[in-house]
Image (cartoon, rainbow over all chains, first blue to last red; front, side, top):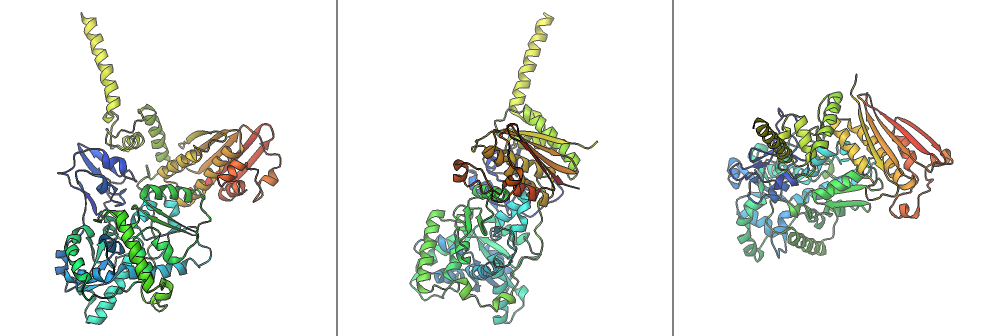
Length: 438
Length: 141
């Protein structure tokens, strides 16, 4: 836990609203939260921006920083990149063209579907899977929270992460290139805004994974623009509207297993929910699933439709996507491999080109001998703690508390149970003392 | 004198409920120590295999983890029944796993070969009626 390193995070704490309860503390999958002096604190180097704390906080003290529609004004032109999960926010939506038209009406000059980016990525992953001697299973790189989870908790699985960029990135590059060509303008005049279901994508733009710089300008929360889009949807439904450009498979990326279906992998596992992802990654680490070719992990329940910045109930949204995919497929059953021309595969940057490094935030010390001494000391402290994992000390578990003590961030008397025992002993000693004087 | 970490994990025969807990703890400790990812992966595989071997095949035993700045060492010592033919046991695909174990997806006969493949040093001794000891080393420096 090197305090000198600060990383960009979309997930933040609103100190005014935090009551210092232990809800977020107990739900953080990387033990990145501590409650100190009655307020939660997020440990920068451990946070993976999953947004679990945003979901769990009853006081709305955990927030996601994203940009607003105001930022469109900073650019001469603006392009919206709707995540496929945006389509799931509107019940009864029959056609993605409606959403495309609505986005243009609220101020975007153009719209490029991330579902189309997903088509290109699907083809790239399918081709990648045909390469010989790859680690098995290959792990999807699409969910940035899962990638960061692997960096923090499963660093030995980093070589399994497929080196293909996220659909959002590929979509942004294609969108900007095509727009500049059509409008004869410079790339820096064009702002490309991802309409995001989660804070993790915002973080992935500000501090990219596997690439030097993101092709996306910024992200706007789905929650923020939902209110603006909603009234337009039913109106446009009856009007003339543009056609969607992606395959039905690209739309399917909005929900868990959508990616796997797009790359036609029989021997794949699709897991949603961050705790479920952790369980399966443990098994992959143990080599228990070496017969798998592909692992698609989504940190949110149901996939991206379950993102912390979505409006609609994730099960309802999942159903909307299912219907939308079925309707689109009935019209055109093309797969990504059939729909994406081979020429496109060399035209854009599809591969990750910066190595994904392990996150060493879980390490006790840079020197292994010192780390061993600290671990030993931790074991001694744990043996003296009650093991209730109550969180009253401000650390999520007794083990994490012992770790905090060893690292110098906490002291033993912050355990209320130890404190109570100590007070009891002191009280007894005082009584004894008082009696001897009499 | 270099610091030494020593942990012992008793593993009971047939205890599928807890199977994997010892290797999970070993993995967590090694991550806290900052053991390099490539070594971590090999220890993960070997410790899980050896723990499951104790559950499936042995009459119970103890898994020991020792760490020095130079190496990680895993020692599995059981109370029996012992392996009559070690050469046969080391062969890929050979397994004496019970129906229960097979129904749970174990018993592919890859356990021992996998351990040997992942460890830098591998040593196995066994005596029928007494037990089996597997000693594995993983180099850090």
